[in-house]
Image (cartoon, rainbow, N blue to C red):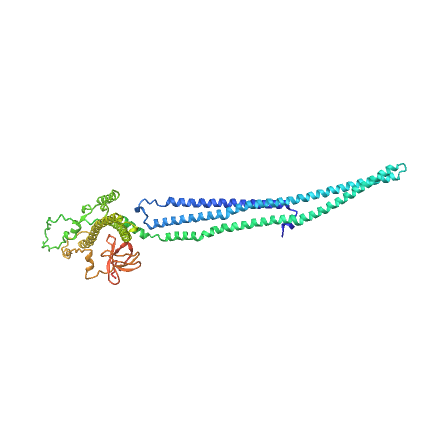
Length: 568
């Protein structure tokens, strides 16, 4: 199949077809350009969206802590990477598709113009040969007619008796001249005819097929180039699919990392004050000095001695203990709201160096954070001091490398910084010990208050009022409240029974005294619940006991059929 042989007479249609092919190529180039602009604008808008919703972190305290927020910001980071991949697609399309197709279109237009000009020149040359042949043919015809007229004139005069000999001779010469001219025209016509036939054969079997072959090859290359561009367009997308898949997988992982229980615990850690809830109001009996009258007709019997619980034993500790703003007030809804407003007001006010304006739990966390930061700074200064000392030793051994005395001011400055940091750490650790001591005391007092509350409930009737039955009051014996220190709780002879079990969510080093180190996934017994100070007492299988952070474990308490705690 060849255009040169099949379409030898369709020059105009081939010219139109090749022009349509170039127009279609330009149309596709325009499509690629608009798609390229869409990808660029899409990537730009995605980056603007990510920038708009990314947090403006002005300080370390403003960093997101909730898992839902962290997951959202991780998704924004993945989306930003996704936008980068769209930019890669746009760049790949711009370089491999649009730029090449525009360059190729320019080359094809020049090539097409050259082939068409070559075909037109061949056609013009053939037309010129045809005109020359036609002209020689017409001349030959004309000379033949003139020769025929001369012959007829000669024959007429030769047969005419009245014609003179000179006229006959003249007519004969004219006949010979016309006959000679006719013969020359004939020879010229034959030569032109032969030349035209040769040029026509060459035109239709050599020149035009060659021109059409070039046009066909050009059009096929255009089609092949379009196919390559289509494939390159798809390859630009396929090349970024692995990275885009990783971005999408990162978004899925971010979604799976959301932990509602962890977020709830963070809320507790952020806003827990460390204060104890308001205690019960003690019963104030104003009828102690009123003697009951005995009605007539009744026999008065002496009332047995009633053993009453000394309120000083059960409530004395809670009543006389120190509170955040002095002695514990008599709580009411108005007092509670005032204290909450005071805590909020101090939290938003100017911060004190020892964080005494914060509630105990928040103060403890702030002090611990500051101590950790100071320890990191101390480690940096210590490393710098060691480096300076090594450099000084090198200078002392090789004086040509430097003067050892030039390092002394820097070493002295570093030593001063280390001393300041140690003093600062000691001061903050003293404050932290003070806070942890108070938290421990509050925890112990809370245990006592709960025990006393159970004792006080024994004097109440099922309706909730105090009974005057002496026989019931005589059964109640005062229970002394025993207070133990934090460090002495592990010296009990009888171990506490287990009330549940827990599983470690995060590892804990347990460096502080009284704490228990644990690994992630480790299962232990719970022997004492969290009393509001953020610590839970646990026991290993080997009997080792200690406190672990409540937020680091997943607790399961077990209850029996009556609703009481079942000891394991």
